[in-house]
Amino acid sequence: MCCMQNNNNRVNEKVATAFSAFAGRLTCIALVALAAAWLPQNSRAATSLWWDANGATAGASPGGGLATGTWGTDIFWSTTSAGTDPGAWTSGSIAIFSAGTDASGTFTVTLNGTQTAGGVTFEDGTLTLTSGTLSLSAGSVVTLGVGRSAVIDSVIAGTTWTKTGSGMLTLSGTNSFSGGRAQLKRSTSASSFSTCASVTMV
Image: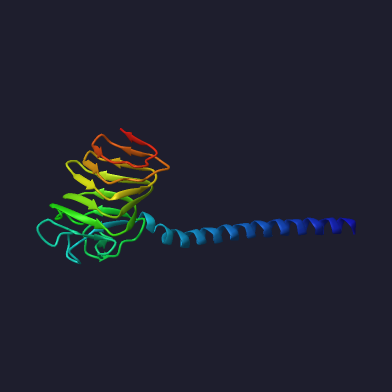
């Protein structure tokens, strides 16, 4: 009887161990499924949006190489680099100026209020961002390619961000980013920093 009881105990222990392992695997599968469902909805902050001032027509310029507009009011943001599906700005996205290659002139984009971006890329033309506040998320990158130039006259707020690329970036607003560091290349003209924690020229 004693031997039979011990055997039953061992069987029960094995069953309990197997059930625990199975339950653990189910929990793991459930967590992976939950993460898979959550990530696509929360990865939109890193989405790239292209400035697109000419509607569903490919490119960004309605004429003359210009693509003037108001960021935060105009429905001028395309999810494709071709610039064929303009929609509203999604806060925290990476702003790319501009869709296509036809916005090659000198033009101004006005910020309405505060616009938050996960980065800004200047690809075409000679662009000035003016009015309002450009709030850069921590770790944002502002990029200008070879031969490009841009002016950010809007207030820059936020924390740590980096300027990359050999293009010329001029910062002419009374900027207020703090709590981190702006790392700027020598091809940056920084005329006004009001309460910046640290600016490093590299």
